[in-house]
Length: 629
Image (cartoon, rainbow, N blue to C red; front, side, top):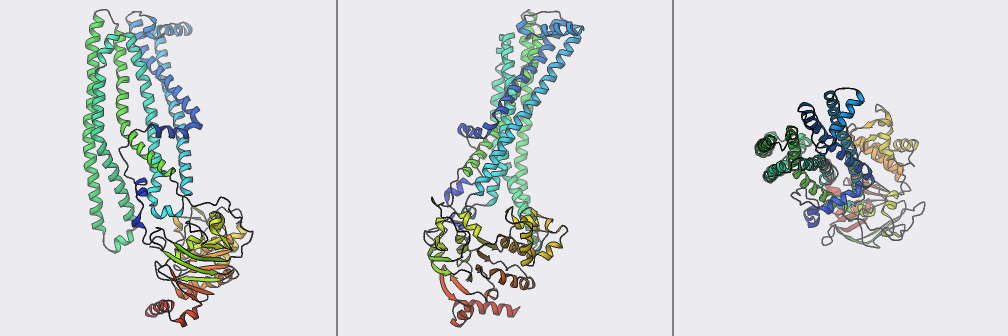
């Protein structure tokens, strides 16, 4: 644990825990949340409206096809029964027109007519899916970009307290769940439009039979609601156990060396098996419920057909209904049941999406940010590099300060080292200097200017930091030196690499500076990654250079290689060096010794050794450890 995080993680604010708690389920349908989501769809409302027009036309076409089979083919051609035009939606007249135009028999015309409506329904339905899908994907793309941009601008203090995995869930999983929500709405629109059209036509053809059939649908709807109520907690457990399985798998595979070194294979397997069994039990229960639900809906469909045959048959025998209308009712029955089934299937998705939407908006609405001065001071083209700490007291939790009344000055061009035991506040000091946190006013000055009067971005352009944990981005070696800074040309990058002796190993790579780097730079050794870090910060040419344990992970031979380069680079440049290995900072102009947040000693290496204080104690302990190796 670094100084920056020591003693703070257990004191996570309650509001932060609630806002970024992954286990958010069972949210009610929030119309306001849906309305807010529509703001991202506003630029694509033309596509969305167009898709709704297409689904309406597709519904009409899907209604026309069975009408042709029942009213035109059965009643009009086979049985020679001519009903009123309203009952056949003008399809008999359309049949006569096709037959006359193409000079074919009414039977062939009916076949052509049927194929026209089937193909038109399929084409319109596909067009609806494509157009609505594009509108949805464009909407969620913009939402994901806005969310990512917002998360990028949250201060470092936010990520000290919130697990990165939870933040990633907002951008990836929760946005993907919203896609399921939009897709579900599209599916429901595609099912309910034919539902209402079919009901309207059925009432026109035979109100009596329609009212006899309607009671079957509430029964199916009630059972669907009960089914979802029983299955909903099971699916919640399934999602939780799958998440835990993935978490457990990632944890064990990423630490496979430790697992094998300590022989934990059996223990870890038992834990994984326990979670896997919990998932199996829930999946089995859900599968059992599903196995009853499907046959029940099918049974209700058959009951509906029986109702149509029984009551409709009497109407046919009584001359109140034609055989074609009876067949049309049986074909429309499926259109009545599909929306009920679809709504049941989408119910859990809707509620899960509401929870995801809430988590996304909590992240978007998170207002934590560094203070920006109303009238920022413009920094000169070149800084002298003077840094003043004046009675600086700071704590990540105000009640527990880590730095206490820290005061000292770093003169322009001075190479100063900061040492001290773990948790003394060394890393915190430089993180404040780089304005990763808000500090009390008039406590840190850069060239006599209060850093709270500067924009944080302006400060970071003038201070170069090399950390022990160097991050590699996806891209080439050159990309990782320049970081898309237009000022860092290929020549500048190569020059910086030569100064830190990184150029030889870079040119030895398969494609030199154009070699793609693997995830986190795994195709480089740790020492090579550290040299790349030096090249990156030196290419910036900052006036102030900060090295935070920058050579801790470099072997002795590599460290000797770069010592000469470091001395040349820090010459004439204000440099702050944080190191546990005191041997590396003996040549510093001055050494500041921190302990428990206080400045205990300041002086040169020789002065502090002669003083016989804390620094001398730390130096002797390290000397004894080195001698015993």
